[in-house]
Image (tube, rainbow, N blue to C red; front, side, top):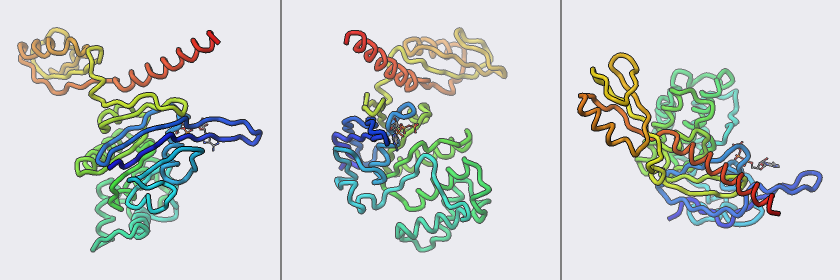
Length: 306
Ligand SMILES: Nc1ncnc2c1ncn2[C@@H]1O[C@H](COP(=O)(O)OP(=O)(O)OP(=O)(O)O)[C@@H](O)[C@H]1O
C-alpha cells in the first residue's frame, strides 16, 4: 500500500494585493510503505508547502493528498504518523521528559512503563543528562534532537521530517542519521526534506527534485552511478600507489571518475594497500545543480523565442 500519494496537487497563494503565486504545480508522487524518500529542492521550491498539506496544516488549492489511502482532510488519516517541522516549536518552560510523556499520552501509546520508555529515547538522542532541564536553555541542535526523540516516542509507522538535520552539528547529524537508518531497517517509512544532499543519498531509497513547485525527477541513487560520477577512495599502505595522494601516517586518498576506479583498485592491490572506503561524492549535488541549470536554460530559451 502507498504510504503517501499525491495526485495533481497544486497550491497557490494570493497576496493582499490580489497577486497570485503558484507554490505547487500539479504534483504527482507515490511513496510506498517501507520506503525512505528524500525530498530535495532549493529555498522556496515548495517542500514545506507539500509537507504542510500532507499534515493537514494547509489546504491544497486543488488535487488530492492521501495517507495510507485516506484523504488527509480526514483527521484519523494521521494516526500513527509522526511529523517534525523545520523549526519545531516546543514549550520552552517544559523539560524533554515532560514533552515526550505528553506526546506519548496524546497519541495514546500503549506501554507498561511510560517513564522508562521516554527516558530510553532521550538516552538514544543523547539527552538523558538534560531530561529534567527546561528547554529554554537548549541550543538549536538540542531542540531538534528533543523534537526528533518526541517523534520516535510514539513509535510511528511513518515519519515526515522537514529538514531533520538542520541545526545539528556533525556528531548530532551522525547520531540522527544512524537512528533514522535503524528505523528504516526495522520497516519504518520515511519521508524527509533536506538540503544536505549527502545525507539524502545515504538514507533515501529514492528521492525527488522539486523546483518552483514542479516535480523535476524521481530517482534511485543507484541510477546516478554512471561513468562520469566521481568516486572517493581511501586506503592505507606503506608504499606510494600511483594516483593516490598522501594524507600522512601511511594514509592515502584519491578522487577518480568511476570509469577509472577499477584500474586504481588493481594498482592499490599491487602496492599492498588496504582499501578503507569507496563512495561516490556529490552525485546528488551535481544532479540537483544540473537539473536547476537545465530548467533555467530552457526558461531563457523559451523567453527569447517568445
Ligand atoms: N504563507 C504564504 N504566503 C505566500 N506565499 C507563500 C507562503 N508560504 C510559502 N509561500 C511561497 O510558496 C513557495 C514555496 O514555499 P515553501 O516554504 O514550500 O518552500 P521550501 O521548499 O520549503 O523552501 P525552504 O527550503 O526555504 O524552506 C515560495 O515561493 C514561498 O515564498
